[in-house]
Image (cartoon, rainbow, N blue to C red):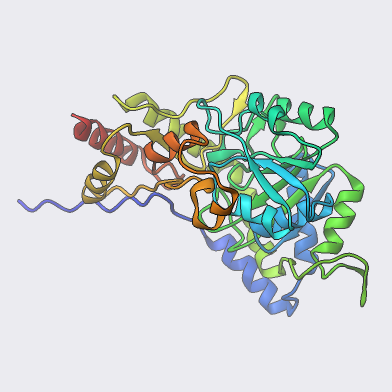
Length: 364
């Protein structure tokens, strides 16, 4: 009897269906390919979804960070406190503005910036605090917002992985200035793109100017800016995806809960009481032989990923800050142990059960 091979389970699977295809064709037929009415509609819809007064669409999550920092006046000589455990763009966006990233170690519970360590890092040059809602779990954002207010600092939320995540009954991206990514593997996509959210009218005005070559009136350039604009093609995809986001999020949460109920012998993701984790990633801790386990899972037809194998402070381009091994032990331990498993809404219950059973078997 021939056994049919099980299809490979990828760690991420972007969903693009008929609604997105129709939306793109409508834009192509309209002839309005650059920023136009779809971008404006997407901004309104996303602002309503997040619960913010303003949403400003840009062409990537990195652009969202750079424009948000510039809108808050971050520039040469300034310092921005952030996490060493994130994608490199969190730090390079600060550097792109001429400022210096100042790293603070992370909370071992959720691997997000630890508020208890932030105050000691504040100096007279500190301009902003930039936490990341890593993997879709909210940072301790109320505490960070209080610190920002006490020291008159900007609070910029890197919510690239946290569309719809909630803390204290509010969605992330509303505590400070939110920065979202719509890269293809995110919880929703526009193909490529980003969004800034804010309740501050002046920050919104400045962000709109900066994303458009620094001009509010055509050919009058009042602020330094570049072309960070989103196109109508991307916004059309985003509008179609946004309508499906809550359903996909509920599926991610259900898959994560199912995995956690089945997996044995590994530290699985924890969710702080009162928070909503949207599981952009479902990340376990593997204290030893992680690379070998990853290879074994690959051979068993299960895709995985490591987010992130090298902390930012140990990256070659950051070495000039002089932060070597041991500077941030919690972040360094996480980088050596984390392993992300499939959790996307394309999984079937039998896929989840196979992932857990395979992991338990390999653990022995």
